[in-house]
Amino acid sequence: MSNAAAPESGLRDAPAAAAAPAGRPRVIAVANQKGGVGKTTTAINLGTALAAAGRPVLLLDLDPQGNASTGLGVPQTAREPGSYELLQGTPLAAATQETAVPGLSIVPASADLAAAEVELPGSDRPQHCLKEVLAPALARGGALGGNRGYVLIDCPPTLGMLTINALVAADAVLVPVECEFLALDGLINFLGTVERVRAAFNPALRVPGVVLTKFDQRINLSAQVRDDVRAHLGDAVYDTVIPRNVRVAEAPSYGVPVLLHDFRCPGAQAYAHLAGELLRRERQMRESAA
Ligand SMILES: Nc1ncnc2c1ncn2[C@@H]1O[C@H](COP(=O)(O)OP(=O)(O)OP(=O)(O)O)[C@@H](O)[C@H]1O
Ligand SMILES: [Mg+2]
Image 1 (cartoon, rainbow, N blue to C red):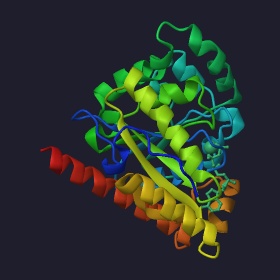
Image 2: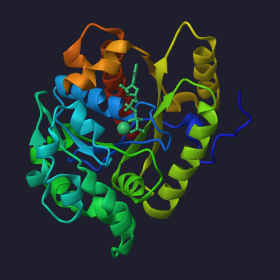
Image 3: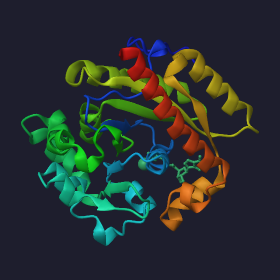
Image 4: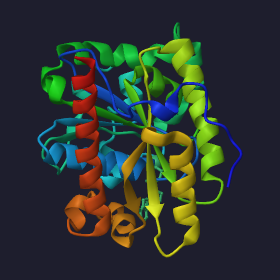
């Protein structure tokens, strides 16, 4: 399928989970420069499943499309203050609102956020703006669930300043990859970018976890992509595979996660498994570090 080589970061053998300084929530960027691969769907439903497991989750919508805000039922008229205002200095608590999912809150995004791509480069430390505005709330931690909490950042499908800010603010990256033609080549390119951002701006960034999405068991290509990605990246790829499932696709039009829309459907169950796997990987990583 691809001759692309894995990037040099030792990805293949790396634990695909997030670390964070003791006592504060983990920050995970959900990112891939390719569009439509399931970033927002993963952020919403992984967030929902983690919240259902008793982990407080803040979903930061960092995409001017505002799809995570739409998918969690935030009306267009109720998206300010949101992530744009947060980047301009509005305190995190003021930009945060509750969702219909207990334990899951959101900083919504409005179309104004598109201006940040133009404005951020004029800042003193353009790549660190999000990290700096999140720092006070993360340091306090309590409202975000302390070391039980998660901040998930839903990134736009670009490698612009917003995505770089997310990678610099994050403890780890979760990369959804759609099981389709050329997926591995795009993934290898993106992981190269993650590695460059890590080396230049955020040495503490954990190597990514890759989540295969939209897997269709009736299509040979899906299985071929899954096997290729696993062969190249080993343990960095989550065991959980998210199936292509129409219930997942229709949930956003109801403004709810698929876990609330139809808990029993295969897509919802897969996201519940993904949350369990993420928590398990983190526990194993902490134990091996201790
Ligand atoms: N497992 C799935 N089964 C069926 N449809 C899915 C699945 N995951 C995502 N989709 C649908 O695919 C489309 C793209 O998904 P999503 O918005 O999550 O991708 P994205 O990577 O966030 O896109 P963008 O790059 O535009 O931000 C949406 O219509 C979504 O409902
Ligand atoms: Mg999206």
